[in-house]
Length: 608
Ligand code: F6R
Image (cartoon, rainbow, N blue to C red; front, side):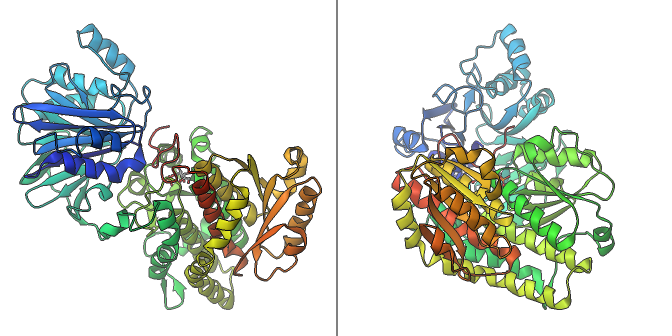
């Protein structure tokens, strides 16, 4: 949520900043701005709307000169999208320019004090207080001013700050919002995420909370809050530049859907050695696993939907009770966490504010935290006792696909790993389960060969006003994700229901022609879901059934049938979700929606 980038070097800064922001636009896209130090003053360009508006206004940055600058792409929290509210924000004298990602919680009190002292505000943002605070505290040493500012503000921040008294350096700091430092040859960078600077360097520093960085053309120094220089380990990113490019696809979402077989392989293969699941990443011993009393799974959105699958799978395979909660509820529900309870936190970005807060709440109650995270070195990863990384690579489309799939794969690995340690699987069952997990990437690839079928179905239904997804148990868990995928990118109202629950009220919404997507992949409950299909058909629904190639009688009841390959029952969600992702994508595409950047949304929800 909001992306920031900064550059110092020998190249013209503005085009580099705009290019970096184009990779961060997924974090917010309602306005953008840059500030560049040129000769003896800071020049600023901002524009409401997509980054392309700013690019046009500045001729792709060519009209702004100078070799050092900061940039921002915004997802509005305080104040509507407008030129005034766009970052960078400037202090009254024009000496300081600030870009900020996060929320300053005490900004109202600070603003009041600053106004009393004669500072003039031109925006409605929380961030503007930072620019004025710099001015207020500045006595000739920018680091001293920074320390006073961060001691004064409450909340979360990643900040990039230019000061016109320092023509050859700029500074940055972070707390609870992401910020990395990119180390180039004669040039250095800051960014909210590696993708923004991958073109220039793969060598980075991850900053911890309240570490301040001073960037010069020929070097970077990092300091703690006591102004002591600290040394950092350099981290080399092994992502390919193409990982963050569209590579010929019209949308990142389709590219990422198609990357799922590889992402699954990269996540699964390193963790299976000699026919056994090896989770070197975690420190949970067999004894710890045997002692687990209860598991909580906490996450938001699609990651929460992975948790719903996880509940069914872990309870079935390990017979340990599992409670799944959305993080925004968990953080305020005063959870009853006992000794030996395990909290599994799931997050692609590793920076979702509610998930991070829920993690901290669980920690305060003494829980042990195992997180499943995609972004290395992110706040959630850093705050966890154990982390299992999903190796999905950068996910740019706002609607998650490959991260969801790799999170599922990790949940399966954890479930089977624990089940084996608990003696819940025979050696034959264990070997079979592992073979089935290893087969998933190829089966997903097989589903992707019949994309046209989903495109055809989308062409039939893209004008629907409302679509229902139903299923039982694991199929219900996937219905939640199918429904979210469709609604968030196509803006068609959609709901997911446990198939047996529909008749307790919601069935009154079914009328002639309402599309019901019925998932019936499992053996045990197949007939039960078929009965629910008959119920909605009797009330005029058109039904699209999704089932495995072993079930033949779905054709007898549904109007359209999508078949997926068969697999171990517990693993079917990994396959069922793929046609639903494709369906959502094609419906949104036929409606002409902005698929990668749906309205009102942003990836990485770093606000509460
Ligand atoms: C939906 C989607 C969101 C995220 C949610 C959590 O397609 O992507 O629902 O799953 O915002 O984000 P992370 O996983 O980054 O914590």
